[in-house]
Image (tube, rainbow, N blue to C red; front, side):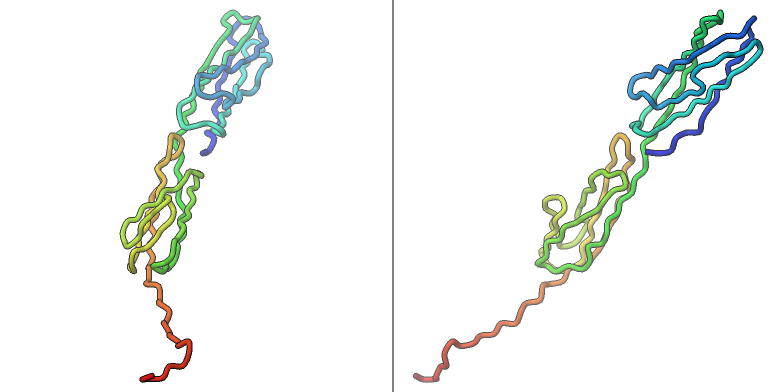
Length: 193
């Protein structure tokens, strides 16, 4: 979730008395690994030369939190080896939204199944804000009479996702039309017999 941060660079300069050959190794703190790529991974530095390390972090697969890694540079022919530097990445909770289509006008005899999705993929909860509706099973509305119903869809978020802005939908509920009653006698009737 989110965008990878811009690559950062670290320069290593050889101020010693001769060139040296080096390699580096990344070790990760608790919580996550594999999120940091450092290039180059090895090489040589001539006397008075320098090497620039590019540190690329990927947030893919990381939960929200703070993560640490240490790059250790080993050089058997350098007198001040190994050298280390730390890299930190902070992954914030991501924003999310809700898609909640209006269920449209209803009749009092209907059972309306509500449906909504969040951009995080987390489950959306519904509540009746106002009107003659009752929610059962988390998503099914029934109606006690006619009127206007307001339903709120919400998603509270979790450790990786911020709470979504609630979405409210309003719709009319009408009384169900009653069919006309007709009575047809089963046989002709004669008055007074």
